[in-house]
Image 1: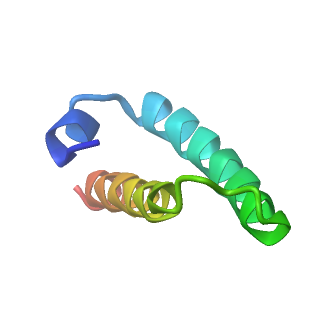
Image 2: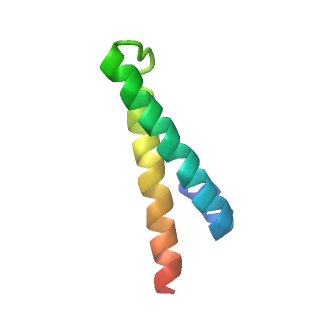
Image 3: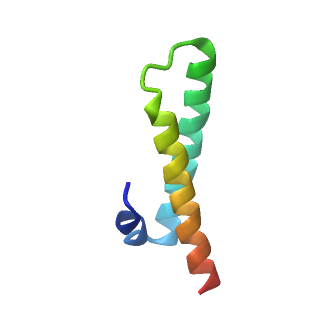
Length: 63
């Protein structure tokens, strides 16, 4: 997910996306703990996407 894609979405869409990513991160943590995680790079990607969304939401809140 690129920053331009995030900026094109509304606040409600971003909050929904953030919830979805949080659930995915939770599931990935469980997969890692049980040794079933295959795509380890996905953890980093989800974490960064969440940070990107939070940053855009904070920018909009300040404006």
